[in-house]
Image (cartoon, rainbow, N blue to C red; front, side, top):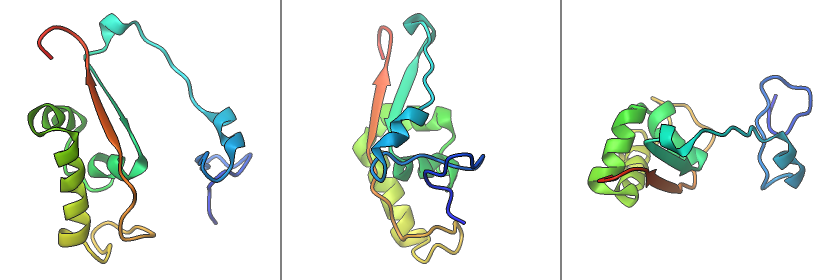
Amino acid sequence: MRHINQVGDPLAYWVAEATPMAARHAVVRSWPVSDIKRMWVMTDGALAGVESYGLWSWEALGDACSAIGPQQVIETIHAYEHTDDPDGIKHVRYKASDDKALACISFGPGD
């Protein structure tokens, strides 16, 4: 069973591209900016570099964004998908590659 945009499904995840109503299911949180060191905004294709493929920890992803930039991070994930696991054997996925977008934002002096 697919869990995309399914009301009442505890495993559901919401894709606004498919159903704009999905925005009503967004999880919203807030923190004082003084408590935030770094923030990443990304698509699930970029998220896979941490959560699915284990290429970085969250801390290491932040370090990579600072050291080599988000474009190179995205290119690393893309290269992994197409070179190290082109058939999705190590990390089963429903398509060979997903779209990827990543913004790395640092707060504070010297960041």
